[in-house]
Length: 65
Image (cartoon, rainbow, N blue to C red; front, side, top):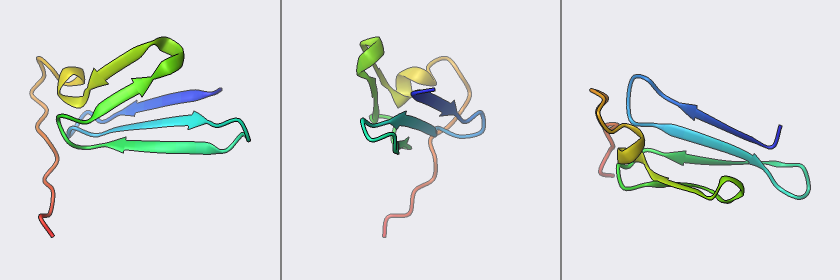
């Protein structure tokens, strides 16, 4: 396995795991609606808002500190 995407059902949160050339997992976590999920091997670019389009899921509550 080289890529894994976990999409929360409760809040706008996506975790993207990918292996680098050294075999280490790189993790990208998206929590902002304008955040962009990019998976080059699939030629895929999606905003977090686009992933949750037409759902009732709301953005995460973020601290302003």
